[in-house]
Length: 319
Image 1 (cartoon, rainbow, N blue to C red):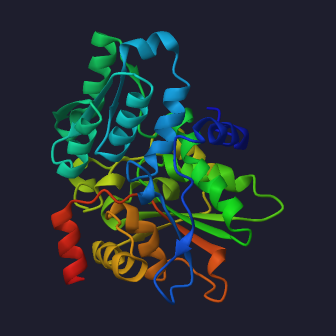
Image 2 (cartoon, rainbow, N blue to C red; image 1 turned 120 degrees about the horizontal axis):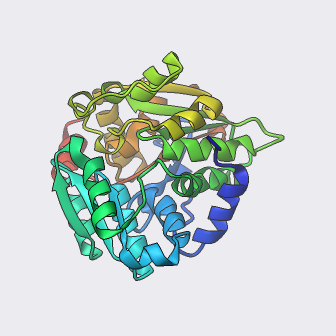
């Protein structure tokens, strides 16, 4: 399997320029000693807009005439709905039962068709639309176009913080971590370490990387975490990228995720969904070493902010 290259990431950066926000680096809560890359500020509220925009831009004109389809718990579906709408392409998003209402409503707001199925039936539903309606599939992470687009998060960090030595990223399906790790490999002569973070309750990537092979976790396990955006398991493609390029992977507890959501709200004035807060949670909990005197040396990606308002209110008020 060919891996995405730094040249692919650079090409994606040029392709999506003007269609996505070049998010800034901002300060973490006072005294934490690291910086944040708040992808929650994207128009769709998450980094997923990068990969979806790159993928739509590369669609075959004939297939795009039929429309695109994906499966998503929310953020990728929202990103694809927006990217497709801006290009005049019809979009269908298959969402799992229990997906956050705020995300589903925003997907519909971009004019996409939403189809709800049990979590275990998402892939089969997408394949049915591909076969029956000839829709072009745009997977949420198992696609080189998507991985290259997500990698632009890493290339921006490298440009914005000349002293960065560690980038901390959440890991769900692995597209973001694969792309960022690819960009970091091109950071010569600097040595930039990329650390992935998963919830303990959805730690299939950590187990897979330890075992040297894919070890899928079923929905009955991954759906225990509140971090709905990182419940997906690695694919063969993203596993290959992470096994080759990720430096380390750590896990965080549900309490640590909850505390990070509150800390980001109170201390950095940023709204983070639980999935978006896992990287910061790892740093705040001491799972990743930082140099407090050099806050620009460590950057944690805040991957998304599309949180259910009731959940956010509870986390911020009680943590």
